[in-house]
Structures are given as C-alpha cells and as structure tokens.
Length: 624
Image 1 (cartoon, rainbow, N blue to C red):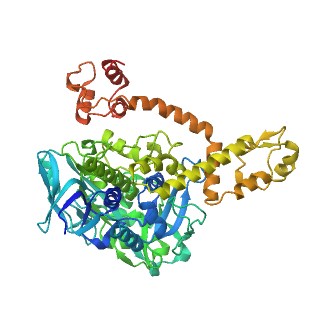
Image 2 (cartoon, rainbow, N blue to C red; image 1 turned 60 degrees about the horizontal axis):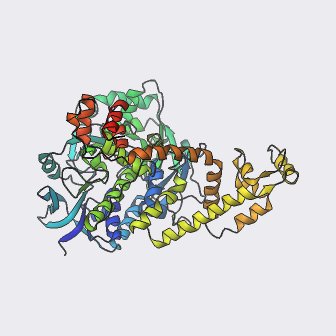
Image 3 (cartoon, rainbow, N blue to C red; image 1 turned 60 degrees about the vertical axis):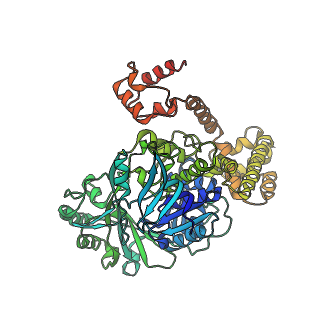
C-alpha cells in the first residue's frame, strides 16, 4: 500500500467522487477515503439528478469531462426536460435514477480509473505543518501523506440525526458521524457553523393505492445529460405519482409540532428555505389546505418510494398517522421515517475561487462543508477542487470559471464572495447571464477549456468540433437560402401560419415564434435535405442551431453586457490595499473588504454592503 499521494480526497459523496476522478484523470496520484465503499455517491435524499439550474450544472460537469452526467444517463429510470413552456435559458433536465445502480456505476468508474486508490476508513485529523496541509491521520491510526487534501465531508462532521425527541449521532441513517476535523480547524482559526437538512419517509409501494394518485410519466426524446451518450436508456423507465395533503393531515401535523425538533428548541441550526419540511410548510402557509407531494421510485425494480415534499423530523407515529389521512396512503407501510440532521459547515468566504482555503495552503473544501445543498452543487465544486488540487501539485494557472461562463462559476463566486446564511441552492435567478448559460450549449462553453487542461478527452473534443461545425453550417445555410413567397405561402396557410408578402431568407422564417426548423423542413425540400445530411446527433444539432437563430439578438446583447463587466474582472486588487486605512470608504466596506480580500474590482462590487461609491474610490486609487 502506497502511503504518499499527490491528492487525498476525504469523503466519497458526489463532491468527493468528482474531485478524485478529476485529479486522477489529470495525472495526480490520488487517494479517496470513505467510511463505506458500498455507499459511494450515495443519494442521501431523493433519487434524482438535475432540476431547475441544477440540470445545467450537471451538463457543465459533463462538458468539462466529469462523470455525473454519464452515471445519471446509465442509471436513469425517468427523464424530463423541465420548463419547456419557457425559453431555452430556463430549460432544465432532470432524471430519476436507480439509487443502487447509481452507486454501482460510480464504484465501477472509480475502481477502473488510473492513478486512483480507495481506502475504507474515516479521517480524524489533518497533518498540517507551517500553515500547509501535509496529509491525514485516519481512525485506524494510518498516516497518509499528501501534497493536497480535499475535504468533502457532507453531513458527517459532528452529524446528529433527529426523529422526534430521539437523537442519534451519524452522517446519515446507519452511518457513523465524523469527529475531530471541525475541532482541529476551529483551533486553527476557521469559522465553523451548524446547518440542518432533512429527508422524507421511504414508502413500501405495495401498500400504496396507485389508482388514487396522478401518474406523471417521463419523456423519451433525444435529450440526456451527457454529450457523449447516444445510446438508448438501458433501464426500464418508470412513472412518478402525485398526491396531495389535506386538512386532516395538517391537523395531525399541527398537534405534533411540540414534538418536532424544529419547533421545540431541540434544533437551533440554519435550515434550507427552498426545501422546507412539511412542518415548516403548514406553519408558513397556514391558509393552504393542501400541499403537493411526489411519489418517486427508488429504482428499476424496487418497491421503495421516496415521498418528495414530506421531509419531516416528527416522531414516527405522527408521520404515519398523518400519511394515512391521504387516501392513497390509507394502508401505508414504510421502510423508514423521515428525519432531520445537523452537521458542521465552514463559512465559504474563507476560500479562494479555486476552493483552496485562505488559512491553510493546499487544503480544499467542496460540497456541503461549504454550506451548499444538493448533489449537483456538490459535484460541481468537487470537480473544480480536484482540478485545482492537481494544478497545485504539478503547476499551471488556477482554474476559475467566471459568472458568464458557467453556473458552477456563479455558485463558487456566490459562496466565496457573499457567504451563506442558509444552505445554498442554485437557481436560474442567481445568474445574471442565463441566456449565455443554457443547458444546450454547456459543451460549447466549456469543453475546449477542459481539453486544454487535459481532462476532456480527445474523443469528447472531436465531438464538440464536429457539432460546432454542423451547427454553424446549418445557421449559415438558413442565412443564405432564399425562399419565394409564391412557393411556400400555400403550405404556410395550410399549416395555419401567416403567409409571406415577399421573398425572405429561411433565417427570417425560423425567427418567427410560431415556426421552427422541424415545422419548416417538410415545406422546404432543401432544408429537409440539409438536415438529412447530418450524419449523427441530428436532433441535438438542429435544436442548437435553432436556438442560436431564434435568440441571437438576446444572446449578443447579453454577451456585450458580460464583456463590459469582464473588464472589471480584469482589474485585480487582491493584496493591493490596506482597506482599514482607506477612510474614504464606509466602515462596513473596510471590514468586509478586509475579511474577504477580493480578487478583482468586480468581485468587490458583488460583496453585500459594498456601495458603488466605495468601488469608485477603489478605482480612483488604482489610477482608473
């Protein structure tokens, strides 16, 4: 057994797996340490990947050469593209996964990745010398040396679970908590806080009256997560099911509130605003007589179902009594109740944009340890931490994604610039450049960057080049192909569309809101022949070209705004000022600028409490 590594990753959740694979695939000798090798990339909460803004992050991970999109496609039991009624900036892929197969697929990837070892144990202490991490000490008293360490401990640091008044130490059900690291880092000057999250009851599908639920089927078109995957989904596709709470359910839950750790003072930690418990819902929205719940299958063949929307830490008997008031659940049996969990996190303003800590060199944090929530947010951070840990070991420019380049860039910039006052969840509304950060063009934005790093493979890069050429060719064809009104008006009118008054370019027809390339193809034989000549990924290329045509004005305008802001991103101010001595700026600005020490003027402007006048003074002092 080798006891010396370039990179050690602590924790094999979604952040840890992506970090370890990225570092190893780049060429760093990497060790992944986990409590349980049979629960790698465990879906601790719902058995799903993606969703609003989260789906965009997964496509970005895939475009960069990460693994989450590939694993999700291989284990999907339902796929849907959310927000189709809105513009493509809002389209968000989401997939139900087979929980057990997801773990199997990830473990197979890790066990067959060169440069990557695994060790089943827990880390109780970091080896730190002269302000730099040098390795870890495990519970078995094994010391592993490393040039970089990435902590991705999830909910395990001093984890404490709550079911009613019962408290159980653990990182998640049936798994032990991790102790020692928080205390060590606090002594070294890190700010440590507590957060809470929860998970719902798991239901035995044999006890559900499905005839009293509403079926929600998936979609089966060309959309997937990975840009590499063109094969049919290998697993049987399954439906989800919708039910609603009612006033009888709410009455039982209200009576149980004194037994809820959220309301009896047992839990004091910060909880997620956007994924509230059922107790929080009935208190926050007292006038609502019902709340929608989603029954989601946990796998291709299992009878286990996850009840999305019913997260709870109430006693088991109250959870069951309330559920039985829902007609479909009148005979319900459960595998385990919902529970809440408290855990330690570290203020992410203590990090650089590379996710390296400011206090300890070559120590990186990724995932829930930074105050985030969600598999996708964790995986995106893990990928960036793994890349930068490799670069720290072997040289190169730090890898940082801008807010105009990726949702991952928005996520990390929000964390290190603004910090968190609740578990951070990504939304499209957090991004200024949503039209630039669409799910359909993540490969166009990011794959070439990753290829230059050495993470994206030549196969992936070649796929990008051929797709890009095909999209540009189709757009150019539309710009140059002329259509005479007399030859197409009859077809347009038969299809219920406004006829032309004069000849136009095909491009001008595609721009019409009610028309698209697939509608026009039967009317314009030259367009049909052009589409048929595309050898592979025809639907993906047609969609990409159409979005580029229809939204070109919006895309160009947003790119112009992003370019202007980028000028401020290029004005670097890190370590250039003694902010406490600049009396012309506000006291709040002096304190926050000193604490965060922003990299650029643009980052300084995003810090809450920093005014435009404060920024102007800094620009004057910079000679601008």
